[in-house]
Structure formats: C-alpha cells, structure tokens
Amino acid sequence: MKRLPQPLAGVFFDLDGTLVDSARDMHAALAALCGERGLPVPPFTRVREIVSRGARAVLRSAVGDDESAVDAALPRFLALYVATGMAQTRAFAGIDALLRALETRGVAWGVVSNKAENLVELVIDKLGYAARAAAIVGGDTLRQRKPDPAPVLHACALAHVDPGRSVFVGDDPRDIQAGHAAGLFTVAAAWGYLDGADPRAWRPDAVSADAAELARLLGAA
Image 1: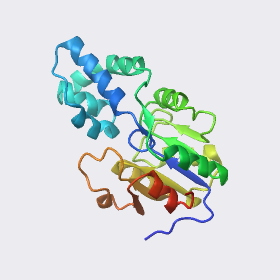
Image 2 (image 1 turned 180 degrees about the horizontal axis):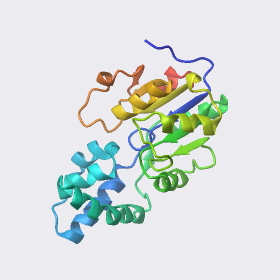
Image 3 (image 1 turned 180 degrees about the vertical axis):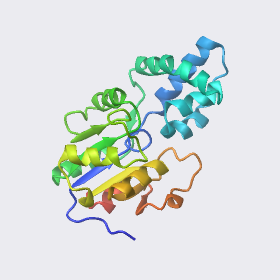
Image 4 (image 1 turned 135 degrees about the vertical axis):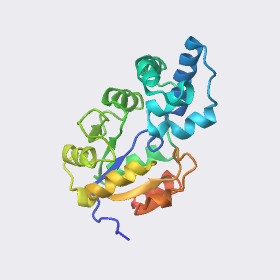
C-alpha cells in the first residue's frame, strides 16, 4: 500500500460529491426541464447517486439513453442549473474545517472536476473559496478529462506542488484512476455519490468515511 506523502504539499478534490453537495440544485434544474417538456421527474434519491457522473448522466435519468436527445437537452439543462444560483449547494460537513487546517499548515488545495470550468468557478465563488483555491481545473480546461491524469497534473502545476507529495480525493472511480496515474496518493470519499458502489473496489490508497476522518488521515485534524 502506498504511504501518505510527508511533508504534504497539496490536496486536490473532485467537486460534486466530494467537496460539495450539489445534488439538490442539479435535481431542481432537472425538474424544471422535465416540467417544460412534460416528462416525469426522476426521484431525487436516484439523481443524487449519479450526479458525480456528470450532467449527461443526470439528463439520461429523465430523457433516456438516446444520445441525440441528451445532446439536444443539455444546453437548456445547464442554463436551468445556472439559474438555480447554486442556492442549495453546500460544502459537505467538515470540509470548511479541513480546508482551513490545510491552509494553516501551508498545504495548497484545489479542485479537479469534469464539470465545465465556468460552472466549477460559479460553485467555488458562491461558497467563498475562489480566492483560496490554488488550482481550479474543469472538464474543458484541457482537451483531456478524468480518468486521464492530465487535469490532475495540471492542477499540481498551477499550485506549484510536486504530485508525489500530493493527495487526490474523489467519490468516483475516475478520480482514483486519474490520481493513481498522476502519481498522487488517492483517497476515496465514502461520503459521496457512490451509486451503490463499494469505493474499496476502486483500489484507492485510503478510504475516508467523512471529512473529519480525512482530516485525521492528512494530519489536519
């Protein structure tokens, strides 16, 4: 098993389902779209589990697996999502304290998401994190997306930290794959949108049940 790097230089997080709970706003946007199109609204419990797979996965829960239908609905869905103002999006319990502890220790932190960069920035700004994050990387920042390691490596470069002295935290197998390939210590966020999966099956270097346990793992409690 890979050992946690010491001294720790950087910690990078997936966004939805890891750093923030955005499922209520994603579901609200989907419900609005369904209302416009006369479609049944998928239950929140189902939508919550698939938010980490992205907007297209959320849309499929309402419009089906026809990719042309997903493509056609995507711009309106994203517009409706922006219109929510991310009013119901919150950092998960313990995240604020963890970020403050990392900052106190001089450990850089950032976000690597497959969500479009402008949407990531809207969420980060809404939560008051924009000036504090050392790196913000979205799904369209580069040509590559997770599970490719390039976005994670790009975040490390933006934060001026060595990947070998950094940690990547996520609630989806793509996060663990990208972190491993980039040479970071990986942590599966078991508090996230797992869609019924056992995160240990992704072979992360560690699994944390909540942000407080992650803080203890990182020596930031």
